[in-house]
Length: 297
Length: 293
Ligand SMILES: Nc1ncnc2c1ncn2[C@@H]1O[C@H](COP(=O)(O)OP(=O)(O)OP(=O)(O)O)[C@@H](O)[C@H]1O
Ligand SMILES: [Mg+2]
Image (cartoon, rainbow over all chains, first blue to last red):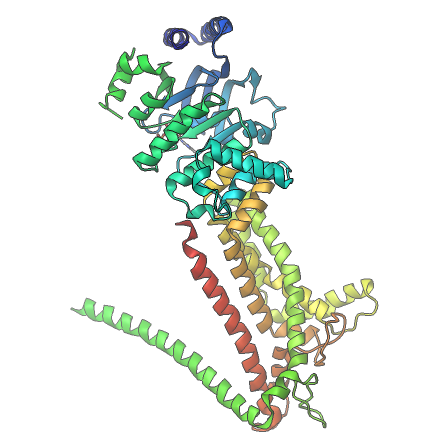
């Protein structure tokens, strides 16, 4: 399975790099062909495509921060975004749950699809979208409420009031986030009293409680110590059976340890995208090579 | 050398003004306490606190603070009832919905409300609000706590909206993102996450507003009447502590008489209230300050 998807990803990279040398109208054609071929391959047995972006350009005012990004993300896998600071990783991640919409100067064109639906279509309710595409942030950001209230929050805002339903969801999510054993004795405790690592797992539990199908993680362990980070990494691996996970990281070891696919961005361009193993063992581009070996960025 | 001297004299000047401020406060406190001690030699504290009539200026004298206190608390309560929902709505709107540029220009405009001389508010209450309310409530008397309370509420709106907005703004952006990221609407985020997170700051703003309303004099003196009455009825004339102090200070009561000493007893009651409120708000501020570091 890994081998075939690797084929798909590397072929995609090749096409992409070729297309960037072509004139723009052809680019779209190329990527359609690529998308087709992925579908055919995936049709055999493998992972479907969960998210794809086509000719995506993002601007903040005049600042062109993502340049013609074409990419397909397989479901039930972990995809890592790497690249030097300011290259657009977070921006790209936040395209998928439309968090950039909150920024006034944000502007984009191109197509972004989740499960084949255009999420920037006029008919899309962003609130509904964000329930399906959860997000975990760089710094743990629990609400200043109890552990229980934090996890139940997403369900409560959906109007679920029944205590038994909420209780079950809280327990299930905390178990999924590997936090249950540590907190089950006192769910009324303030979330702010937890350690940083526990807070981050709580934030993951909070996200899981609304049962999204995708989890976006923006440097989820950068504020944590190595042991807490390792726990989050284990957790991610466990969760990928049920969720599609995209993680932004500056930690190359982390990317190589947890992710199935890795995308390398540089100054708004998607430079290389392939399965993680070959990206790290055998990068196709010099830039990628330099970055992952720590020669710049 | 001379630079050092300037530095020193500036420091000295600053110190002096700090000392002067504290000294003034202490002097006021001293006068309040010593003068009301004279009063409490004549009138027992029990009577002062339990008697339900306040008639020091009449033939049959009664010295119960309760009617004045009820007048003060009633007008204050009405003003908060007006100012809290409006002030908080404005604060949430400005902090969570308005664009930054709009927020920056509207805030000083709102604060003008607090800069209007209170005598203007007083006449506004008496000449405009009371007659208007009379159309709805025909039984309303010419002086009443309702219109004074409403107008006082309008005056303290900026106090609540401005301080609450600061409190809302200081809630970390990360909490907004967390809530929005879970599919909450802006409205849900505002009222289920941001307002609760800013609650201590909001409470402080309300306490300061209460403290301001309790001490407010002109509006109530003009529009609420001068009839000490132990009542919760907002449609009749009452008298607040502050109004009574003005009334006696301006009247021809003989200095040194028990009647005159009453204003110090009333004054110290007022002082205790505002002192306690300010201490509570100070404590809340200190207690909850570090919660987001
Ligand atoms: N809210 C914003 N308004 C305007 N420009 C922004 C905003 N957020 C990011 N940018 C710009 O967009 C570009 C990409 O930023 P982004 O945060 O996506 O980078 P990143 O790869 O996540 O970086 P880092 O690794 O430092 O988190 C940068 O040039 C940044 O200055
Ligand atoms: Mg980032």
